[in-house]
Image 1 (tube, helix red, strand yellow):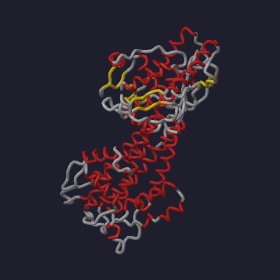
Image 2 (cartoon, helix red, strand yellow):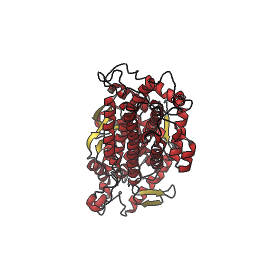
Image 3 (spheres, helix red, strand yellow):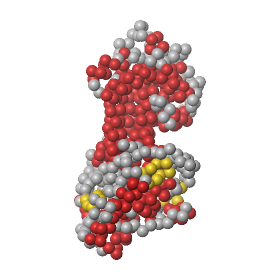
Length: 523
């Protein structure tokens, strides 16, 4: 059951309560993309606070008992056999954060850093990590003050959690590192002081609890699931527009064809395309005099291709939704009662493979959504189908003008890059930590590639929307189905009809932004 989001209260426009239940993707996106001027406040429920306190009492009892427990009084990774004395426990927790903060590359987008922080806080709030309540509340303070860690994008192998990225996030609690503030990156020390947030001294287990976990992979995956849904809705709108732009038959959408294939995504895509085209005058205008026997696969096999991408996405979304309710720390702390009785158990929940495979699959799905889109754009702009009677490249004066010729080139370039991104990161293993971490997921790499893939696919679909909106103009005064006309009107709110050659990059960017707003999504 997703985390509840109470109605806005008198003090804050909106609130997300961390109560231990799974985060909803929509709630995570809401907080991650909130701004200081339109905030979403994160709060810890009383029940979650008590669970965290009970879990911490188990850790305190273990420390007092003096036995060796990984993460409390031992080294980490291949150094786990090194026993650490109690008087150096705080130094150990501080050192693990500093030593692991060794990421490289450009910083992650700020929204990813915020999503990571919320995912981490929600996981700790489930009371199986052994942190103190005050440590979790300090983490939430940073979220609510919009002090977001500046996290280098490379460094995680996605197995013992997202160690390096999470270390850069955890530096906030020490008053160290860098953070996003007011659109720029600044040192945490003075930013935190200016908001009266003091550094804290970490206790046993806390440094490890902050670093272990799949929170970068999960946070990125949640944002991408939200964005892919908007992208896929736009791709369906573009596909339906393409049917009438190319004067294709709609016979391939006959429900009986798809029922006998039995693939759920295919059935849904065909149903939605029929709905978008319902009532089209353009389809009826050539139903009885079309000399073409069949349309190209990019039109005729849209339900099969896009349906497969939709089925793949649903697998990805399910994996992310489950992870948004998970605890991926190690070791895990299970409290038996409120007095400190319980167990501390080592395992491998921090391993990123469940998300790595899913994020690799998302990149594959993007490659097909974009690939078939580019083929439809090519078919329409090429102008070699005389029955359709479009001018080459949809130019008003072909030869003197090039119309949308190079827009298709841009789509082809994106599709080429998407093909490279679709090579899975999760299938290549490089051992770390002297071999004790001998099978890694590289899910953070999968997340980076999937992020790039969603952006590239969005550009390709934007180019198709630009193209098909223009192509439909040639069939006026005939109208398409109500759904297609609604999509056409949406494009025209940001891009005018092509009267002559003009710079097209701003048009494409405007449609990309339109896709991102969910303008083509179903009500």
